[in-house]
Length: 183
Image (cartoon, rainbow, N blue to C red):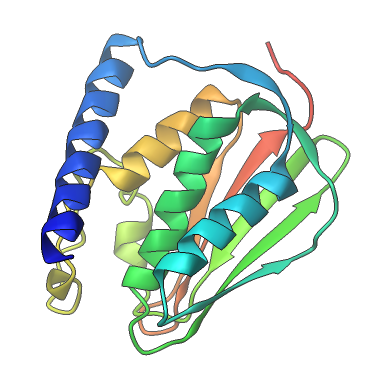
């Protein structure tokens, strides 16, 4: 089991590095089509819930929301945000995913009650290889690639991504996606 866990981490690291390399060259493939965002969220939450006994993953705002984009890449964004929420909220037991929409965009928010992020780090958190340098965050090693990949995928989908967070008060990572194709 330990070997499988380490192998999965290594595989994810290699895939992240490959994705970043392809992004830099403008060669990351996107298979864009209409899909139900809520169905994707439910699928990702069910898969991650099966792998964690420490947190309950809750979905709020369950209505069908059709968006246009690469379902697998948006799934990658959701997995990254949810696994970060679990990782950085060791003393909490729930993570919430909220889905809403207006006339033009769908919005997804992933909220945790974790360690939070200092205001000074907010504008840099989506930069490639950026790592928060703080004693408490150093307990949770990472390479600063996941949020960069998320930001690049969301940008490519003509959406936006941001964080709202206060140190010791948790974080909410949100992103928008256009409801229809934006050329």
